[in-house]
Every structure is written in C-alpha cells, then in structure tokens.
Image 1 (tube, rainbow, N blue to C red):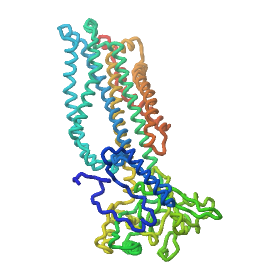
Image 2: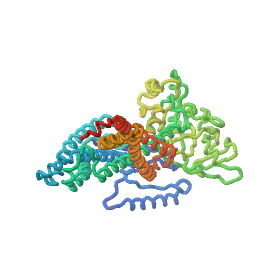
Image 3: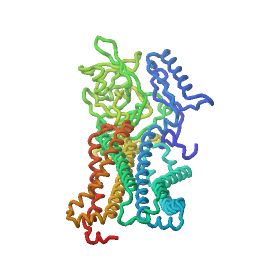
Image 4: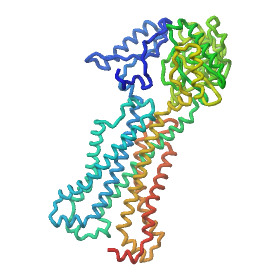
Length: 619
C-alpha cells in the first residue's frame, strides 16, 4: 500500500490476518464483520445486492434460530467511507457559496457607487468618442487587478489555513491527509473567480450600455442620488445580503443549539478520570477461554496495585465506539412462551467494569470472581431490557439466553442504560456477560482515578508489560477524549458555519453602512434644506436610521422565509432542537436589527452634524 493509504480509518497502521474463534462457527454469533469485495466487470450494485440477499435467505432457512432476521447490505465503498461527512460538507459548501454571494453584492454595490460618482467623467469620455464597449472594457481593466490580487492572497491564505487546520480536523472526516491546494482546487477556484468577475461586472456594464450622454453631462453627481433605478438596484443588493446573512445565521444558530444539546446529554457513565486502552490478545499464545480470562485477570491485579487507581475493569466494547453487530436475546417469562428482544448490544465485562466506567448498578449485583465456568451462567441487563422484558416485575432471578438452543443465564443485576453508539442515538438495548464465562480476545482496559487520567498511561503500560512484555496496547485515550471525539464532526461543522455566518454579518453591516453613507452624502443639500426649514436633529437622525432599518427589515423577512425552508435540509444534523426553533428564529432578527442600527449610526451622526449654510453652498 502507498504511504497515504488510509483504510478503514486514518488511525489504522497495521493489518493482521483475521482470526476467528472456532466456537463462533458453532454458536453463529459472528455478525460483526464487514466484507470488502470488488465487483466483476459489468456487474451492477443491484445485481450484487440481489445475490447476497439470496444467500441471506438460504442461511435463514438453514439456520432459522440465528439467521432468521439477518440481512446483508451492499454499499459502495466510497459511500461507506465518505457517507458520514457528505451532508456536513454540503452544508459547508452552501455556507461558503452564501458568503461568496454576499461579497459579490458588496462589490457590485461599491462599483455602482463608483460608477455613479464618475458619471460626469464617463459622459466626458463618451463625448470625446469613447464607445460603450470601450467603457465596459475600461471598467473590467480596473477591476481585474483587484480580483487577481485578492485571489492570490486568498490562495496563500487557504494554503496556510489548511496547514494549520488539518491537524485539528476530526478523525471522522475522510481523506484528511489529502486536503491541499492542488491543481484541481486551483482550476475550481479560477472558475469561481471568473464567474464572480462576470457577476460583479454585469450590473455596472448594463448601466454603461444604457448610459444617457446628455443626462450625464447635465447631472451633478455630487448632489444627486442618481436615478431611481440605480438606487433601487443598490437597495435590492443590500436586501439580498441581509437575507443571505439571516439564512447563514439561522443555520449557525441551529447547529450551535444542537451542539449545546449534545453536550448536555447524559452518556450513562462518568467519563472524568477514566483512562482506556485496547488490547488484542493472541489466541495462538493464550489458547482457550480460560487462558484468555486468566491473562485478563493478571493484568487487572497488576493495575489495581498501582497507586491512585480507584477501579479497573475490562470490556470487549468501548462506549461511543460506533456501531457494532447486533443480536437477538430470548428472555424467560412466567407461564408464557419465551419472548425475544431484537437489536441488542452484547458486551463481555469483568466484575469491576461498571465501577470503573461509572455505570450505576440499580438492582442486584455486578459479576464476581466466583462466577466461573463451573458456576451457573449469569448475566447483567440494562434498565431498558428489564423494563421491556419484565414490565412491573423484578428482573432478578429471571433468565435470558442468546439463542433458542443455548443455555439459560440468570439475571443477577440491572445497570443504567448508556449511549453505546453515539450521543444522538439511544435505541439499543444492552446486556453484559461475564468474561470468565464468555471470554473475548479483543478487550478494552478502563482505569478510574481521582486525578488526571493521563498520568496513569506509563504506569498502566508498565503493568501490562509486567504480565506479558510482548502484549501490545493501542488506542490509549481518556474517556473524556473519547466523548470529545464523538462530537468532533459536530464541533467542526458548528465552528466553520459560525465563522461563515459571522463573516457574512460583518459584510452585511459594511453593505448597509456603505449604502446609507452614500445616501447621506448624496442628500447633503436636501438635509441642509430640511434643517434650514426647522427640522430637528433627532428627526434627521430618525430619517437616516429609518432608511437603513427598512432595508434590513425587508432582508430579514425574506431571509427568515428562506431559512425556514432551507433549515429542513438540516433536520438530519439536528438534535434536541427543531428546524423551526423559536429561540434561534427570534434571536437572529434581533442580532440583525442591532447590527443594522450600528451600521447606520455613523452615517446618521454625520447627517445631524451637517451645517445648513455649508450644505446650501455645496456644489
């Protein structure tokens, strides 16, 4: 494989042969594997799905007790790798395009204002023989150096920004190492630059083509606000900026509210002060479940002897570790046929696992070292299994089994329900088996301390080496880091969209300020006349502010309508908040109105300071 090959995730660095416990062939419980296959030439995905569905049907007929409800799904590898990031990246692309359009509106407004200022100069050039196409080319020649310089600065900033951001990007984002400013990116950026230049030049060019030479020579550009059509275009551009800003702010607000809701979710365990690391126990070195269990027991004895260790346990699955294979659990009921629970998570744990993870034992007890292979089978269930299987009854003493033909196991305890797959999904039931009665070679060691869990890394690794110097330990993380990593993609989306929304708000303020400032300058004589005729400064101040707020109000209304429609597309990314969240859609207009008032304040202050005598002499 090439050095940049990353599969299935960028954290994988070594591949080893797959070793399957021979007992799994008898119990038929190995549903947690993924198969990667290359289709033959000419074979479609639908044909492959049909074939594996037939295989699943035959297995269900041959082994009804275990394969009755098992289905196989064929998925393109590209979708399997990048599917988790597809919708978030589309949201980011939409945010970037919105910010680009807002920038274009600002630039067009500035060019229109500049063209209006130079209307007399344009009239003189036309009178001297300049054609309309020549005037358009002149405008393009003046704009292109600005765009070229800005694009160069942008490419440099993108390169430096990527180098800074890549180490901080979430691990769930696929192909992170390949993110760079390469030739395809430059071609794409060049195309966007060309389209931007065309959009920015379109309106000024149309104004130049419709330019009235006689009116231009007569027009006093310093005292006129231009034609009503030009003013209307500038106002519409500002309204569009504000509307796009409302959409981006609403999206950012919904994502922020979602992230806050996820941070408040109780995962069902206490992650503070817990260190986790994974062990891959060799079946060739420790043959048989008893030897695997004995090896785990010796490691736990060494770790328990370390200072500052409050509790230590092992489990074959770590919470928030992502999806895994599911199984059915059959439970015993009084005077009735046994029932079954589908989509149940099974975890093998050691006795002190629940105390180490901070999972509360609600009824009964946890496992003990006396629950050996010679003792009756025991199991611990979570509170949801207890409620669904034996509503209104005590689950203690009841029995469950993993298949219709397997041995019954007695329920000795009930523990709290935890979020095993992710914080935003809570549909899985959970049961726990004793490691002495059902050993696993892939185990995760969790160690609880009252201090900083990171300080236990070296002592715990030393304890493992003391038992077996050749035993590898990997994925060393605190449970707080595991919790943060499960939210990393959400955090990335929220931060980037919020940055885009903040930048759009700033650009919208600049746009409103520019239009109002230009209007105040063009209406200087009118304002002077009003004040000479007795208009109060507060009335002039209100006049200017009202003009800016009218533009902002129109943009806010349009933006809220657009945000209500587009927020439905974010539904799958939201948690604990609806697409029409009242708090978000109330806060955004307040923020926009405040920003509009701030943007209008300086031009309004300048207007009330106009000297009527100076304004009347204004030429």
